[in-house]
Structures are given as C-alpha cells and as structure tokens.
Length: 184
Image (cartoon, helix red, strand yellow):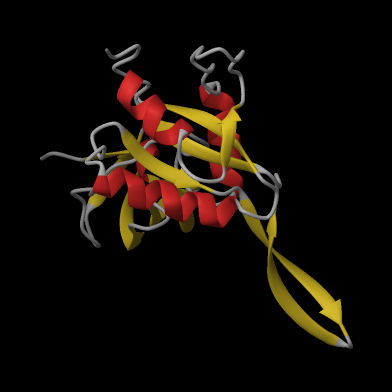
C-alpha cells in the first residue's frame, strides 16, 4: 500500500559516524531490492570547511548533523520496510514508534538544507537546455528575465547564465528549478 504517491524527504536517525556507511548500504539495498521507483536520493548533510593545522590550510568535509541522513522517497509499506531495516538505521525522525510512518520534512526545510550543500531540492534527470541557448528565469532574484546559458552543471543542477541588468551582461548562477526553455 502506498501512503503517499508523492516523493518527499525524510530524516533517518543513524549511529553517529556511520552516516556514509548507511548511505551506501541504503543505495545498495535500493538497487538489489529494485526499489528505484520508491527510493530516489540519499544525502548526508555535509559542508567543506577550511581549517589551518600545523600552519597549513586544509579543506575537510564536516558533517552538519552527526547521526542523521536525508532520504527522498515515496512512503510505501515496502519502501518504509527497506529503509527502516537497512543496517545502521535506528529509525525515522518524526515516527512515533510501533510501526507508525514518519512525518516528512517541509519543502522549505529541504530547500534550505540542500541549497547549503549546492544541491537542488527538486531533481531533474536531465535538463533539455544546451550552452548558448536562451532561457527564461521563472523564480529567484532574476525572475522575469531572460539569459544565455554559458555553462551547465548536471551534478549541482545549476546553470551559469548571462543576464542583462541595467544594460550590462551580468553572470548569474541559476538552479534548474528556476528556469524554463524559451520556445521560439
């Protein structure tokens, strides 16, 4: 039975320090149990931090929320079972125990978390826009403007776009979610 046909983000509680192991286990289980239509993305909230140690600057990856992993999924009984029984997962945040289903994160919470990591909350498998094409910006600071795509990053789901502001070309980084292709 599917409780929700809409994919949403949930928070898993794990043993601290095992977040990446849980992520890898869950991705592996998703493939072996053929749950790709229910479990989409697994993310460990982390950021790159520059530290100085012994007079040298080093860039390290720091876990923002030790003991937690984000998962984008459709909450069906089967998907819930697969995720809940993944080695290292101690439960869902927002579940009251006794087999109750968890509460998903709010869209604003997800957008803020993923934005800090340079990711998009909405996943587009492939954006059908090429470098040099003109796009229309539908939301954000440049909403209502058009721009020319200069670079495209499918991993971060961002475009570099030249937008005309006050008669000058201005480069801008725009998320896939905030653009539409201009049809002539």
